[in-house]
Image (cartoon, rainbow, N blue to C red; front, side, top):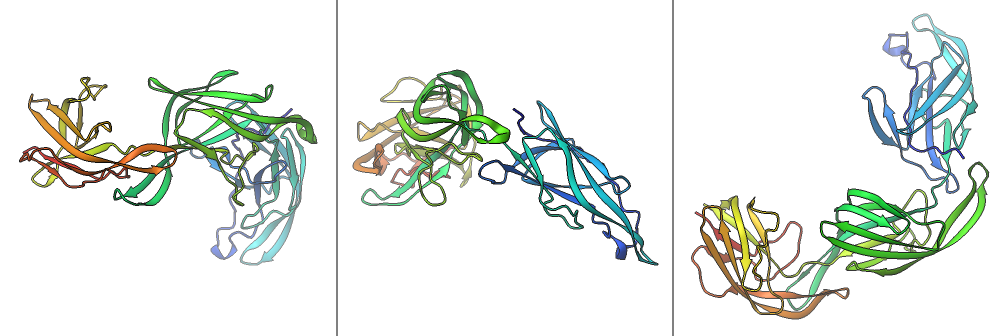
Length: 401
């Protein structure tokens, strides 16, 4: 069965031979092509190669200029893996306008002669001067694509109350995402991933690999095999999605514009699942300063009284800030920051671990009353509550003059 896929276009361009500005655009030689998905009829953003720039560009519709010296043409839609074509015909008549402008070409009766696309139809047979949709191209829906959005949770707290709960999309680097029926179904950095489910089974398990860590997620669903759209033949559709076991902090269903859970795999895709990362409530944001300005320092190692390994697992860093995790199992932590010149700053902190959680799904408590264990001249606590925000809030300043 043919599939539209991603496209590029080629169209023959002929400029108007009428140079007088008053006579410009007398020819109705513009044809608009809009891409849609069969079934829903929703617009489809496709990737077309712009031959003027030799780059691929996304768009839901495109305009082409016809050659009014002939009465047939071909649009070539080229992807990285295939090429589709649509041939069309039209009628051209020469119409006298005025002594100054001469004649204009009037185009009409636009019709499709042949194509190897999933489906195409003419919705307006008269080309225009300013654009609009003349041809709609439909592709068969993809029925196996699960869409997952990744989000970071935030909130503000004074240790007693919680306010300003919110979330933002969060991009993740995935070394590899595997499905139980196919390895490496996705690699790269993204805040939204589109993953294939197994249409031969009623469940699919995924493993998300980043660095040395792994997260897992399983979904089950109902499969229905039928011919809904004649050009597409028999297809298998996925409905009644059920979230199974997972190891993420929190996962919920995405919702549509009626706030209903999206439990069917749709095309164009909208979020089926939303993965949330809990705020890291134990991070102390340390800023390095010199002469009241941010100062980049090179740090060789960071250790603490409750862990002996170097926190900088990837080696030395040069930065104006660093985030340090305090020990939630105690009310004090001491860090040893060694710089590239061999000097060491000792950051000894005390704090209160409350019983307050920012979210029900996030067990880490709010930490307040951050303070130095003993007063050190070049160290200053400027924010006594640890709050995970973007951009981060500085809790401690270290003067490195």
